Length: 371
Image: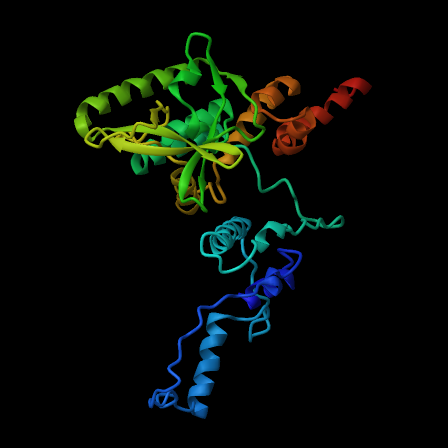
């Protein structure tokens, strides 16, 4: 543990100091029979030189240094891994303080995670806009055809993201009570994500922690109506094996959060479970979860030609690019997306459509009369 934290401080700089330097372990003292005739050292054997070399080789594999033997630098951990590791350490030390009382305080309360800032080469020839491109209508149709064969349950959230610009957690967290087919609008009030430290799916607020209203067109109205009919049909076909989705309120210290659960009709429902009718369901009634969608998108990126590097958020890029390219007001797009200010909308998304840029600069030709 000492080496792990030392490595996290330097060279990786994930944390600012090594908390293990303040740890003083408490041990249960062994009771020794002072009048025993037994030889306590009788089973201890010296280590041969060959075994010593084998031990070093084993440790080199299990705990390599920052620089590998071939001279290459060891790759760092992902942000998600570091967050999960930090959460586990928080809980472990908290448990060690109370009720176990192995240590006197939780050193993780002083830990502040550091992130490596992205370095931008001001003189690079690389196209920074090339990695995020909107999906053409033709490719979108190919994507739906592929999913129809491989994973039909993923189609509905992808359609919602394409026509309404929702984030992956927002699409999965959308409930039928949030869908107004008459007014043709969605009320985006919640998001769902996986909490690695709790090993549960947590229903929480959106990224900006604000409720927003997203209008949609006739195409999505028809999609919602067909999805509703399909779910009612599945409910009849599965019978008692059809699942119902619930949430449970959990109070922890000074905060409240909601855990997601799914039970079929044969299981007893706890009294503190509250039913919620999600929109994006699998055929058996279970929620189509963000992690499942993420796996589907990675599979698409690997197997479907033209979708290399595809991710769910690219649908949100496409939604925005389509609106801006067809004359939508940036302020309206900002509100639909739930961005804090319009500059975020323009900075992140407007550059993704090269055609829109070319049309903009050609406006100058009209000014000088060259068009």
